[in-house]
Amino acid sequence: MAFFGLLKKKSDRQPEIMSSKTDRGILVFENTTEVIQAETILKREGFEYKVMGPPPEIQRGCDLVIEFPLIEELNILRTLENERLSPLETVPVTNPLLKPVDLFHTKDFGRYLMVRAANMKLTMDKDTGRIVNVSGGGCPDVPYLAYELVGHTLNEAPNPREIGHTLCGYALYLAYEEVKRQCLV
Figure 1 (cartoon, rainbow, N blue to C red):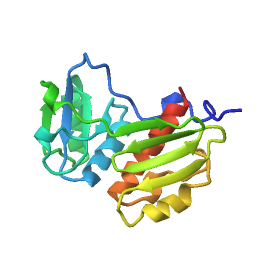
Figure 2 (cartoon, rainbow, N blue to C red):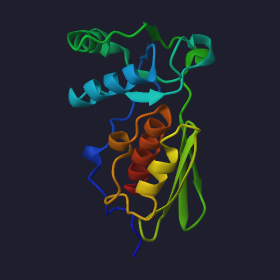
Figure 3 (cartoon, helix red, strand yellow):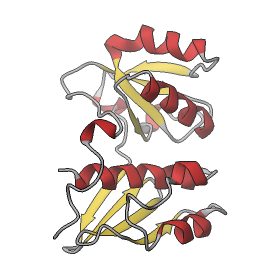
Figure 4 (tube, rainbow, N blue to C red):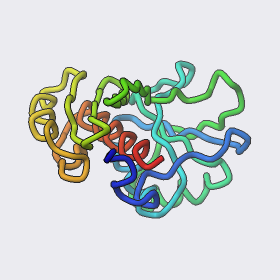
């Protein structure tokens, strides 16, 4: 029996961004730590968002941005401000050149599914649900993350966000969440 559909219910995953017809904005932060903090806050408060790569035209500091529905801008900024977190800027996506870059690339190898998020790759056996490979990045915690994840099912493996401490660890967390999301389809 294939592993697909045996994971968490869809409501437990990261919210997805709305359709392309909705006006969107981008929150630009100084560093990855601030993006992770903002994502935690937005997720906890139930906002719709998506962590993405910044378009080249607005790269300022961090190599991640948060895309959100522009209609929620004031509520999101107020919520972040209450947590003492402010983006460097908020940019409305008014032009195709300002479209954020999707961090995810998926490759289906038949029995195996590989998801790359930014510079990190996570590969899983679709029949067993076991993580068979973690690769990419250049951060010092990558070998440790691979050691902790490979050989475990997605449900057994520790969340990379909880055990990683670098941009690579965060990117692996995004790949981990995307693999889980794709397995629910």
